[in-house]
View 1 (cartoon, one colour):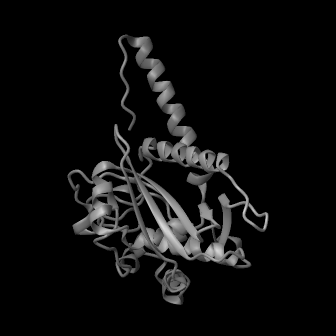
View 2 (cartoon, rainbow, N blue to C red):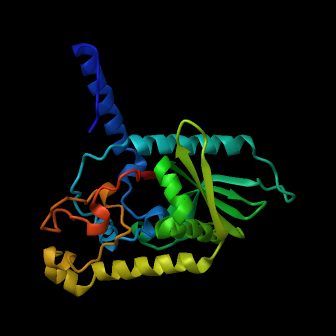
Length: 273
C-alpha cells in the first residue's frame, strides 16, 4: 500500500517504519473502528455494502490507503479551529456557531441501532447546516456538474434532522466541496432543509435492517444465494468499499461490485466525508 523511497538502506527502512505507523494509527482511529452506521453512510446507494456494515461482516480488504482520510481529518480540524476563532454571540446570548457537535439523528434504546454523528457546523444566524468535503479536482468538477448525489444529499438532511432534534430550527443545508489543488477551488451545493429527505433515508435503512433479521436470512445462514438477492448500485463507489473483491464468485467473502461502478474511471478521485 505505502510507497516509500530513500537514498540508502537506512532511509528506506525509516520510510517503511513511518508509513507503517501512519497506516496503523489511521486504521485504529475511533472513526475507523466505528461499527455502527453514521449519517454519512445511511444514504449509500449500495444496499449490499450497508448490509455488510450492519452485520459487521468480515472485510475483504485490509489494504485501503488512509492518506486521503488523514488529509480530510486534518482539514476538518482546521475548519473547526477557523470557526471557533470567529465565534460570536446571538442576540439571545447563545453562540452563533455550533462546531463539530454530536447530534442524534435517530434515537434507539439499542445503542448500535441509533444514528448519531458529529455535525461539522451549524450557523444559528442563518439556520444553515454545513458539511465539509475535501475532494480531488476531478471530483470537484463532477459535483459541480451533477450535484452531490443521493448519499451526500441524504447526509446533509440527516444532519438537519439532528439539529432539529437538538432544538434548532434548520432552514437550509449546504455541502462545501473544496478541491485538493495548488490553488483554492470551492463549490457549494445548497438547498432548503427538507425533513422528508432525512425520514426517507431512515425508512430505507429500517427496511434494510428488517431484511437482515428476517427468518429467511437466519435460515439461509447468510450464504451466497442470500447475499445475491441484495442489490448493488451503479452509483456505488465500489473501488473504495472494504468488501470489494474483484472477480469474487462468493459473496460471503467479498463482492465483485456493480459492473458499471466497479471498473476504474479515469480522473474520478476519492472524496473525504
